[in-house]
Length: 275
Image (cartoon, rainbow, N blue to C red; front, top):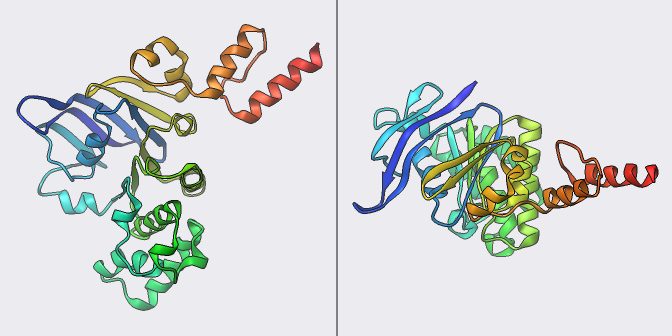
C-alpha cells in the first residue's frame, strides 16, 4: 500500500538551478527506504520537501491520501518525525528526560501519562539510564538516540533520517544504524533514510538513487548494486559485501541472492567443504 506518492516534484533555491527536477516515486507503508546520491544530488532537499520544511515549486506530494499543501500542513507534519544531521542542534532540554518531554508538553500530554511515555521510548533507544544526564555528558550517537526517542514519543507514521549519522564517529554511526534496524524490525514503522552510508543501504528494503536532482534508479539493494558500472557513473560506491560476492562468483563460489556477511561466510564454508 502506497503511503507517500510524489509526482513531478520540482524545487529550486534560486532562479537559475533546479535542485529537484521532475522527481516521482512512491513509498509503501511499513518498508525501510534509503535515498542515496552524490553530494548536491538533492537528497536532503527531497526530505525537507516531504516534511513540509520547504515549499515545492510544482508537482504533488500525497501522504496517506492527503495532499501536502498549506491547508493540510499541520495534519501531515504531526504524522512525520524527522532526525537531522547535527545532534547538538536538536538537543533542546537540559536533560535527556526534558528533551523527550518537550514535544509531549507542546501537545499538552498530561503529566501522569508523560512519565510512562518518556520511559517507554528511552528504553526503545537504550537511553533509560541516561534520563537525568545533561547533554554535555553524552556522545554524538547518544544525542541522536535521544532525538529519535523524542520523535518516536509523538507516534509518527513515518520516520525520516536526514543524514543522521554523517557527523558521528564510527561507533556513533554503528549505534544509530542498529537503532534504525531494530525499530524497523520491532515496530514495522515506515522509515526513509537519506544517507551516504552504503552499508546501511544494503539493509534497507528499497533504494532511490538521485543524480543531479533527478531519479536515476529505484529498486531493491541487490537490483541497484548489480550494475557496478552505472553505480560508478553516478559517483557512488558498491558495498564491500557485494564486491566480495562478485569476486567469489568469478571463482565459481555460489553466493546467496540476499547478501549478508553471515551468508557470505556460509557460502565460503560450503565451497570449502566441496573441495
